[in-house]
Image (cartoon, rainbow, N blue to C red):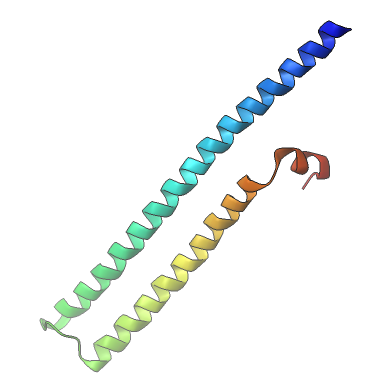
Amino acid sequence: MILIIIGLAVLVFYAWYRIGIWRKKLKKETSEAELKLHKAFTGLADEVKKQIVMFDGQETLNEKEQAIYEKLKKALNASEKVIQKEIDDIDEEFKKSFLKRLIFWK
């Protein structure tokens, strides 16, 4: 009987250890995705501005081009917020206790 209890305790601790490793890996991947997201959107916004400037060969933007640039920048920021929210939601899931999720089955 004691051997069974010890075996179950070892099994529980091993499972807890493996879950910890899994959570760390997922957290790392989420962080990397977030960094790449910010890099991509910054580069995209810079490229949009360059393309608008190159459109007519001027160094500054006229009112129409500035309006287009601002709309594109706003769209990029909105897209980034949506994706960032999804990353934050994933991050929140990691913060929840595994046992709580298991007990309440959410």
